[in-house]
Length: 317
Image (cartoon, rainbow, N blue to C red; front, top):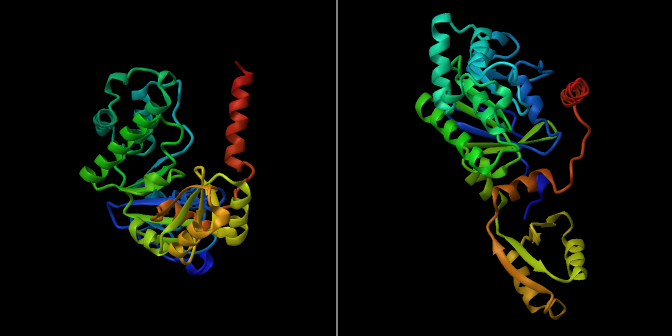
């Protein structure tokens, strides 16, 4: 079986069809946020070319901003204003005509089921309600592309499902293109296209099904009660063996032969509580392209600024 490095596809170009759902996956520090900031004209690219709805991010950034809606990972609402006032303020910033502001604000509230909360201050909303409001706000100027930076992080199951209902409705009824960055690989399973980024490069761009096929054969999953056996197998397969979810996973070139070898090995008898062949998931594809190591990193400038602002607010209370 080819190594992860030889399987890697360094895609230099990625075109996103109108009305599609694209999931952007990558480890910490891979370049996801940088790419999103370039597309949103918050950062100027140092090379290459990026276009949003046909508009070059370098040459016509104002047209790019009109064409996209953005939902940041961190809350960006004004807690002192009411729900409705937040929407009207956003509509004014984006140049929505005066006569259209209130109708669009009400339409946004109906979409995200917050009409009954129109006069409530944002500070009284739960985290899930705030996220729904941010999605409605991002659609006020009728963008063709909606960029969502980990929109469901920290939300409960019900809130996550509700948000996906809204996003699917936007795609189905308004033809909005969705670009999602996420650490929830399960959320990428339903994407039309998955782009895996690492070290600032696109490692693979394809459908989830094609990416799973790329990994090839099945994986061997073991429930090992004996640590000495687990260490021996890990040493034998190196990076192609890892522990996850209470099991030892092995990416072998001959998975069925390895499985039979373990069944016939007298040294392994009584030390393996479970043994099976498992079809690779999108998560296994992701790990095969980006590695098993942790990606610890310090806070970026934006995170440090947010932390400083939060600490300052707490000291003034």
